[in-house]
Amino acid sequence: MRGLKGKVAIVTGAGSGIGQGIAKRLGCEGAKVIVDYVGTPEGAEETERAIEQAGGEGEIVKADVTNMEDVKALVDAAWNKFGSADILVNNAGMEKRSDFWDTPEEDYDKVMAVNLRGPFFLTQAFVRRLRDAKRPGHIVNISSVHEDMVFPGFATYCCSKGGMRMFMRDLAVELGPLGIMVNNVAPGAIATPINKALLEDKPKLNALLGNIPLGRMGSVDDVAGVVAFLVSDDAAYITGSTFVVDGGLMRNYREQ
Figure (cartoon, rainbow, N blue to C red):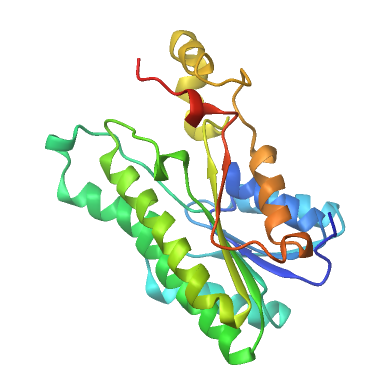
């Protein structure tokens, strides 16, 4: 795979988990990276250090994707610091568990705001910059196997990820003439801090692993490698697709 030297990437939710892994990988491949985070800065600082230790360059920006002023500031930061941006990775996301009949309006609004509304308007701000500069670009959304696969108790999450699938497909057609490629990466069960309770619950973990043909949880590196490929020149003719990273889970899943 050809490297990303000279490219500039914006990665949301880059202070932990999958987003952190993606930001580190892109930085190690030579990209300059805008490291977005919300909450406390320690994770983002760790990401930036890893990029710099690999000889890359990072810039930490605190931005909430549900806040339109933050969204604009995040895109502006790339142009102000590095002169442009070529890559947007919409990674920030969340989930809330509840039975459908008990799901409160505020939970629905929050999940949709982070998982779908935020990426919509951040992508819009990013594309406007590319269009005005007459530059091509890459957009990768970190979706989920649940853009297709049912997940009882997480109707809001499934709705948001299903929306992300059609968002990607629509933009691939609409933005293709501008030289902007749009794809989704759909992780399955990935070992991240958000899954700490599952990883420590052996019966539940073993039941899940029994549904995964490869017999293991995925790692953030498994996801980051696919993202790095999709934003490289080696993927110059790929747009409008979802790339599932799940060890075969979708093909073998059974509700317990």
